[in-house]
Amino acid sequence: MKKNKQELINLLIGIFSQAIILVLGFIVPRIFISVYGSDVNGLLSTVAQVFAYVALLESGMSMATRNALYKPLNEKNETDINKILSASKNYYRKASIIYVAIVIALSFILPLVFKTSVDYWTVFLIILLEGMGSALFFFFIDTEICFLNTCGKTSVVNITNLIYRVLCYVIKMVLALLGVNIILIQLGFFLVSIIRVLLVRLYVHKKYAWVSTHHFEKGFKLPHRRAYLLTEVSWLVFSSTDAIVLSIFVSTSMSSVYAVYNMIFVAINALLTAIYEAISYKLGLVYNEDIERYKKLHNLFNSFIISITTVLISVTYWLTNPFIALYTSGIEDVTYVYQYLPLLFCLVQMLSWSRYVSGNLTSVAGKARITSIVSLIEALLNVTLSLILVQFLGIYGVLIATVSSLPIKVIFTHVLSEKVILKRKPWKTIAIFGANYTIFGLTVLAAHFISLNVPSYGHFIAYGFMFVGIYAVIVVGANVLVNKDLLKLKNLFKKEKPSKENSAS
Image (cartoon, rainbow, N blue to C red; front, top):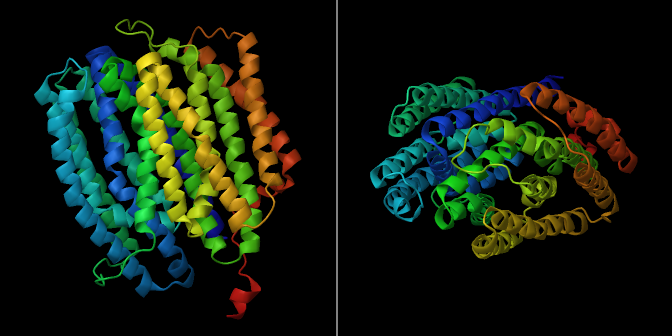
């Protein structure tokens, strides 16, 4: 019962925190565009994308650490847990030095290549302060955050992140409305980063006093850490290319257009991630206990995640351009509404979330090396196509490149999961995704013939509730037809009974 309650708390806090961040995330860019213009807004969003790349020094180790922790956590082996965490901390400390060097180098180089009207030294300081905040997380708390996520304490991570993000947004809003120099705003972010470091370290010290990162054994290395790093680097290169390419080859103003559309889908992605991470740790634990029980949970989780994705993305497809028109009303320094951008952004999300569960399985099952190679191929294809298509199609070109590259890993991870790891025929998985993509395809077709009149935010909210209700019924009904296991949704929140083999041992 206690475990059930923890999973539900993780889910509710995750959704609640992302909802608050979502609201604030829509308010702040509008203020920035109004006060500083599209050029500055595009510059800041591009800098954020750049450091999403650099943060990948952390991501590979995070995944390697989590997968290494599943077994000792199941066995409650504190000695092995501390040994793994110590190896992880040692890596993070070394990576933080590399990270700082990269931040300083980028601070000098990027102001020379971005097409922006902002002066060199302002861009330099924006980049430097943005990067140094993340360096604090690397050095002090990324190992602890990884440990908390693996233990199922995502609620704690979400609460500390919520406090951090709210403080950042408040600083942004207040200082922007006062019209202060954007360098002071970036300095405020850096100072708030220190608060999050203190919160995480205090919690771990109080609740897990036995945890220590001072048990490093020379020569001990986490399995597949390089493969995980390559996979994460490839994914972030893949997902963050667009804004950077636009800023270099078109303008930071066009990057602002991309950022305004992207903030909608970042919000959707964050909400889905909160739901996913509240429960996904259980997949790794169950896989290490009993493969047969895992197979049932895999089908259920696949249906659960893609159902929610289809509802949210279908509703978003209807309402994206009406929202953009309302959101950018009165802003005339650049055109913001583009007819086909919602379709391309929606396809990116649908395809990306189609591989989350299968991708998690390939990681847990120790297939990181081959998966990392496919990830690299996917990323290189996306970058190549983006550099070519942006010359002819501008913002459409970078998104077409992303959509064209995504199916490679979607197909690969599902084939690897179903045929190689689970050793079964893939028909149920095909039926699950076929049903959801059919619903989204019919949505696109219907929207082509039906034009929505959304003259105010009140109408926008009303349409949102109406569409969510309609699609919830349609999508759940379709998914139950192809996978009746979805009716056993409570199994996602139920503590699994140990297998007979484990009990006997």
